[in-house]
Structures are given as structure tokens and as C-alpha cells.
Image (tube, one colour):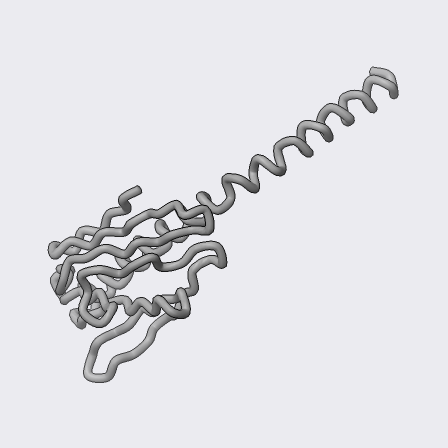
Length: 141
């Protein structure tokens, strides 16, 4: 290959890269929403697993005003194990069905109450995480 051919190839690659960056930015809020929903579902399953292995109620408290949630151990003393924030472009749309915005799992892995946690992004796309009384956690698009 000659030097001119190399410059042309790198020029075409540069133009393609510049064209795809704005397209990626369009999809970024939806990717962040999907990621936040997966992380939340994983943390719900983690709290459920802790409840089963430690034989003590565990759960998650949702703070809709600060867009964060806490993994909590409900023993003799309520203990916050971890606090997680939602990404900047994602927030809680609503938390339905849970008393005091808390999901609790008993030592058998069942949820105390069933409900839904709806997340919304800046493009007004929503994703819902459903928790059933059996402890089944499901992401609904």
C-alpha cells in the first residue's frame, strides 16, 4: 500500500467514527436505563439470597427523592449494608405495592409484598422491575 492509500483509509475510518458518535448518544439513555434495571434486579436477588443464607430478613429501601436505594439487613438492629445511586439520567418513576418503599425478603426467599419499581430516563422511556410474593424478580420493558 502506498502512503496515499493509507491516508484515504484512515480518512474514511475517521468519517465513519464521527458519524456514529452522535448515533450512539441517542441510544445512551436507553442503555443506561436497561443497565440500571438490571443492576436493581440483581441487587433485589442479592438481598433475597442474603435472607436465605443468613436466615434473617433482608431487603431494599427506595429513596425516590434522592434516586438511590439501600440494601438493608432487618435483624435485631436494622443495618444498611450498601447504598447505591441510580445513574444521572435515570430516576424512579414510581414504587408501587411496598409499604414504606421497602421490599423485604423472609428467610425462605419470599417477598413480604408484591409490587413494581418503575424507572424512567430523560427520553421518558420506562422499564419496570416486578417483585412477586414468591420472591420472583422480573424486568418488564
